[in-house]
Image 1 (cartoon, rainbow, N blue to C red):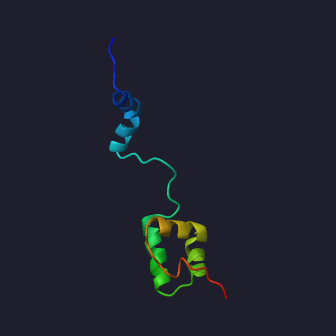
Image 2: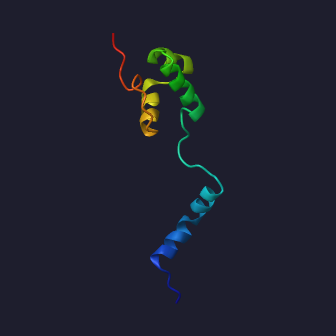
Image 3: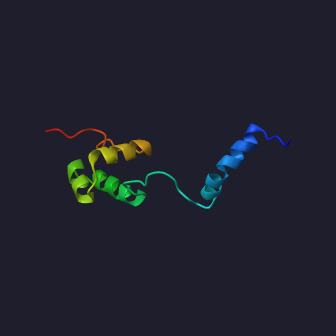
Length: 85
């Protein structure tokens, strides 16, 4: 009887996913804001646009933008503070 180690079993079980990843396949939900769009939004905010105006212009939700900024470790002081007047 041939026995396999636990790692050999796991490697066999996950092999299709590993092979797909090596081919460049991405998994999970696609990003709502692309890197290019994020750069444009940040540039607009740094140029003096209000957050509300930038969000309307690029058709993005405030929560989506703040989550993406926090995930990417990009600090834009205007973005992480709620605008209240």
